[in-house]
Image (cartoon, rainbow, N blue to C red; front, side, top):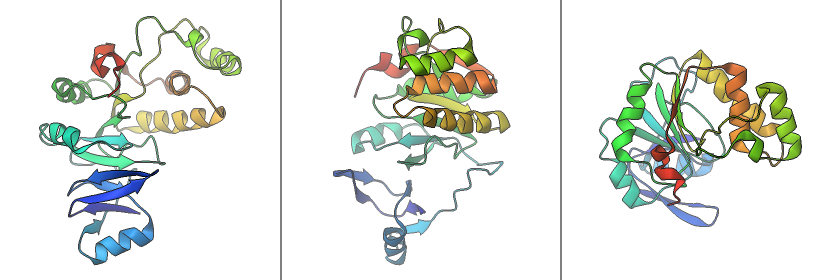
Amino acid sequence: MWIRLVTRKTVLIAGDAVSYCPGDLIEVGGHLARKWIAAGDAVEAQLDLRAAVVPTAGIACHGSIDTALRDRLARVDGLRMSFHQDDWPVLPYTETLLWVPEFEPRLDLLVQGFKLLQQWQVAVPLWDYETLAAHVGSEEERAYTETIVRDLRVPLRDTRLIFARRCPDTRRLVATWCEERRRFEEGDDRLAFLRALYLVKPVICDLPNSWTNNGRKR
């Protein structure tokens, strides 16, 4: 059940205590959600991922982040944040940053990334300048990917940081990406995204991998 917090809360996820701030949009079990709503600690949130218009841009975070990083992200005015565990990827905002927080995003580039969506449907960094689709995944997945891409000597995108403007094409991209992720039990997410790109063909802007701090882990 989706709720919007009124007070700061700590949730136990996979054995780790995760802190959320007032205003955060999170998905929790129905029993816990109703308990917090009854106590005035949260309100029910109507999250319609199919809605045509959402008034603000926002960050959809797959996982959790610590308080210090939250405070730094709060410096970017006008951005909302939502936190997702199982339902991923999603486009809850008109302009969404899909972020898997294995690295800290560069705050100086966040606003620039959203501005790119005025001209592009998707903007995503390259994984690096050496790794190609031919270098990752299982032999079976590479062979299947080649039937769609035709040539595996193509660069990979970093699926941990994707700017997407919500529209029919990007909705299809996300749906196709989800399908391709399920196709192989231990598949490579970068190959699944590559297949989705070639099947849907959105207007994409490739960014340098410096946008992900060169992939540096947090």
